[in-house]
Length: 322
Image 1 (cartoon, helix red, strand yellow):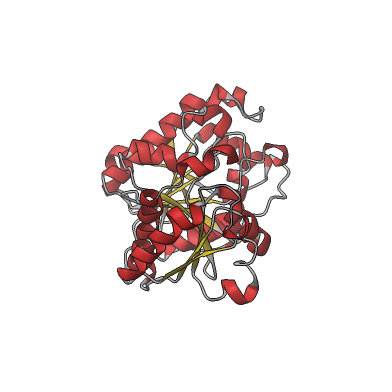
Image 2 (image 1 turned 90 degrees about the vertical axis):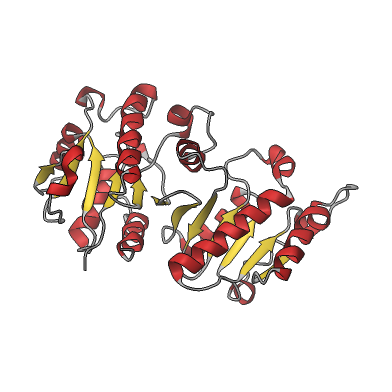
């Protein structure tokens, strides 16, 4: 049985990603071959520093069909990067390198070399430069997708924030019936197509206890009508629930996904429950994009003590998909 390759972009050069990747491929064998997009010089430098040994196989991206890919070596598409910049603090110096890495990954995905993509951590401050809220929005723009969603996935419970990396003062303005409905539809479609079942979805309110002292209560005026309309369309959905109780064990066990109104409302409890055992999946793209649920963590660079679980889960997840 042939599995399409997983395209893996290493992300920020001054991050812990390659350390985690070395640990993962040392630990486990995978059905899907990997194509790593990174700098060969940087890769070799990290291998020496971390005392990791594996053969590097340079891949010509224009002639991928001629290769019989496997994971006996690291299948590398080399993107040049000056090693003099290596092991510096994360800054805008790597922006051009990261852009070329993304361009290469998107080129391969567009050619249908694969539909499976993992990117390592990216600096929001420098690479995204406040132009995009996150990589989710960056990839949606690059692929011309207006409807997309962030799903933080764990096999027991996943969460989806309706708004992503917004300041709290801006959240209420962005909560609309349209955006809630779009993201619920994407969640339902993803679970049916990829997981093979229709998910049970809980929706939180925006306000504490779904109550508001103001004249406009978004929970009643916006969120509740959307849930009611989707129920009529046979979606398995309930709410709005108070965010401070929906994550209690007896409540969360009823659901596959809890959809919240803003980032920390649902990501904080999920990370408290599962720590690194979760992955970030972007819904609505023409491919399945997964990102390990960790940042660059440059302070840990070269120490060889970071936890690879989220990256392992990311690759395992895509490894089940042909």
